[in-house]
Image 1 (cartoon, rainbow, N blue to C red):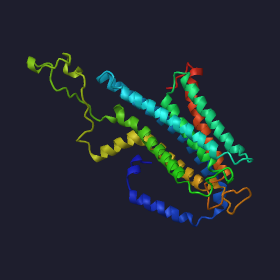
Image 2 (tube, rainbow, N blue to C red; image 1 turned 120 degrees about the vertical axis):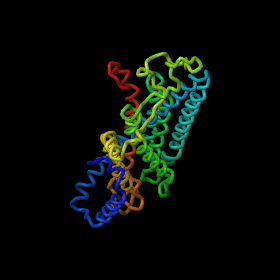
Image 3 (cartoon, one colour; image 1 turned 60 degrees about the horizontal axis):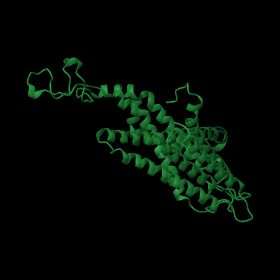
Image 4 (spheres, one colour; image 1 turned 90 degrees about the vertical axis):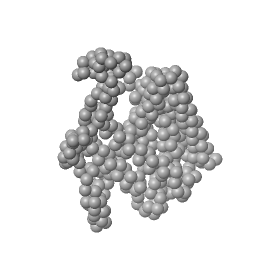
Length: 351
């Protein structure tokens, strides 16, 4: 398939999308939906959960590396000017840790049941969240990999997932928010999804933009020719070398003589190997949204024993609790792996 189609014929794409939606209204549930589509949706949604954890961990690492790099750049220009970036890292990490611990206390206060009634599932989720935060922090502080800011980000994310898990409990005794619209939870969830999608698009195309393949024309922009005999025009910062060996002091990207056909060909060659990945992630996100809004296909209608969710409250249910808890376990486990793997396998390159 031509990669340039990703940025062309948008009216036809919108028309095909709405026609497809219309067609789905006439597709019966049996035999394709419950036996085929439902299974595919669940598998794709679980795949996105796994990818999303990797994306968020990667973003947390890059956030810390970006601010450290800014600190180094400032230090290279003026000694001591980079401290503001390091202070920002510390303040951000401490703020996230405070938010995480505050959230844990909040969960213990409101989501463990009333006196005489124990909510074992909620207590287990909250306790394991606290243990995971402590384990990540200890692993990071006792090793050379990772950073405190990255650990704080994953800790805050883990706390958010713990809240999302217990707030999906269908037992009203264990879930004081049952029956209320969780606006903030929905907003945070959608925000994380959009950030994951944006980061996916950026990370899979940044390499082509910044490497040699993304520079169409590069020529020297040295303002003064060192070969000129006029002493007043000499640039002493540039060594006396031949023109063809002169270092490049500037980059000019793009070719004014390039026609649209060449631009399209370059786009196809440069992004053809990465755009399909972005499209796959879009498909997985669609399946994840569908799974989340329908209780992973477990909605049966009515009110079951124990207060199971109904079609009017599809986000609440045991299945949703399990899947969100799985997301948290994956996030903590993957981050711990990035901290411990280089320590136990020093001969392997994990960079």
